Length: 237
View 1 (tube, rainbow, N blue to C red):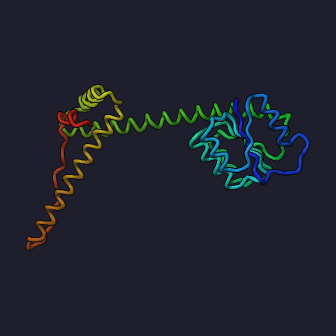
View 2 (view 1 turned 60 degrees about the vertical axis):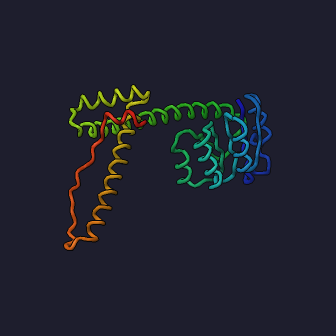
View 3 (view 1 turned 180 degrees about the vertical axis):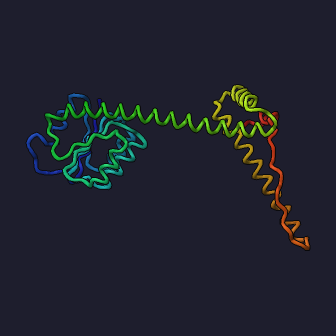
C-alpha cells in the first residue's frame, strides 16, 4: 500500500502525545511507502505523477481548499481518503460525507488507532465504490430503455408494429457491433438532424413567401419527416 499524507499548514505545530506526524508516518510505513506533503498544489501534482492507495489529511480546520481538493480527487482519481480535523462546518462536512467514500475522524487521531482506521476506511471505500458502480449501471440501463422506446416509436412511424421495430433496431445494432442503446441513440440523432434540416428549409420558404405575399398569412402544419430505415445502415448511424 502506498500512502500519501497531506499535513495542512493549519495542523498543530506543537507535538501532542500519540498525534505526531512522524509517528503517523512510521505507522503507515508498515503498510508500504509513505510520502508527506504540505500544500494542495503539491498533492495534486504528485497524484498526477504517482499512484497512491491512501490519502491521510491532517488539519486543524476543515476549510474550503481542502474540501475542493478532496472533491477533485474523487472526481479524477478516487482513492481511500481519511480526514482528521479538530474543527469543521457541519454543512460542509455533511456534503463531504455524502458519497460514502470518505472516513472522517474528529478531533484527535492517535497513532494506536491509525491501523484500525485505515482498515475501516478501506472497507468503507470499497463498499461505497461498489454501490456507486451499481447505481451508475442502473442509470445506464434506464437510459438505454428510454432511448430504445424512443427509437421504436420512430421506426413504428414507418408502418411497423412494436415487435418488428424492436427487431429492426436489434438487427442494425448487431450488424454495426453496438448496443441497443447506442443504436437507438443513432436513430434518434438521424431523425433530429433530418427534422432540423426540414424545419430550417420550411422556415426559409415561409420567409421567402412572406416577402412577396400580399396577405402575409402564415402557414402551419408541415408534415413530419420520415427516416428511411433501409438507408440508415449505409450512413454510419
